[in-house]
Length: 254
Ligand SMILES: [Zn+2]
Image (cartoon, rainbow, N blue to C red):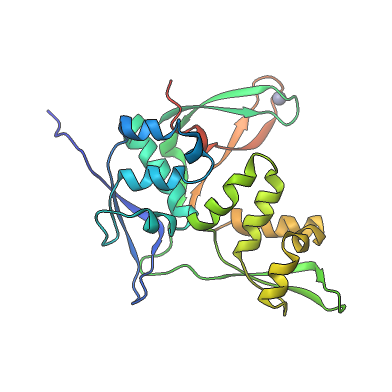
């Protein structure tokens, strides 16, 4: 006879760094219930605060905080939020999940039975907190005075950033992606904060495609969190391609 388990311990890939130092990685989750399932059907929530509400309800403990506030969940890095969603899905509905990808060569839908325990997760070293990411663009951005800026200091997005861009995603996914990237730029060459904010996403649109790819690779590359990239084989044409596992289908039942 196995003991009933109602709470599940997890370790966040990045964690929380309180003002007085140290890193808190430990969190405790409980399974989703009908109350949380109802959240998935709330159109207002889906357009913004759904992930925060879902995680807030199912987190029994976050670092040294219990009960857990929406504010604390919103302040987590997206990498930690996505990891918590993955673990919440696993404890609630199990590891097996049907997923659908589109073959980029023949456009067929490819159905795959994913095993969520196969997903690779990267954690920061114990006691290490998240460092800024330094990136050197090849072409850079030339401002109105003719100064070319190439050195970027980046950080990773949080729930606050996610909620800021989520309402844009349906209407203009590229704008949403650029707006999210812009929020993660802490420093770009010698541009002032005001200049960055005034030019906004226009700066990102002015970058060459090569630089834009370099920038995206920074976020998708070796940063902590779950690697949602899957290698998929198309049964129709035999192509092997990279597909991104869709987190928004995690809690679709059936
Ligand atoms: Zn194909």
